Image (cartoon, rainbow, N blue to C red; front, side, top):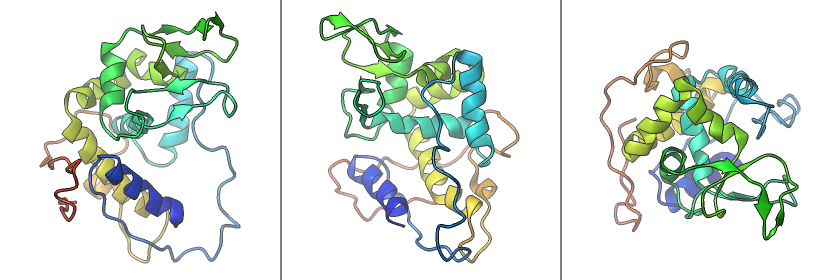
Length: 226
């Protein structure tokens, strides 16, 4: 419950949209039957095609389509990698405590090259990419998003339209838990799926795009129509 609550709170406090939150699940008394650890995507599956299939294998089983997968990857707008934890180094953006579409903008606008040096010495860590300054990084699975056409069109969409990215993020946060577990009522993630049925990967249907949540928190009580 704490992690489910911390996600929308963190997004809102970091300048993202206000995300409605619903606590509690009624189908499990404890976590004994939960999925094993290490079910999240890897940073690198070993090449473009393997990265594409690896990411899809993880998220397709949860009912997400390509447009939603790209939106979920947009969480890399926040945080950074630490060599002592993962072997990788650096932040994805220059505003690592802000939730925005900056991750997508940087993916499309910056020139990324394999990292070879770090602090004046040869880079000995796992394969990763860096921008021209060497201050920002992308993982192999990040770069895959602009190498695979089915993903790239959504990267470009979110890079141009932060409101669209926020809209999809809100719906994923609201609907995904109801799709995966029972809360005592039947709610399908497909009911408000921005991109249509999970099995299809097409252009999103026209939706009312909400205004972004005020970064000054002037509209703290604002809600969205989802």
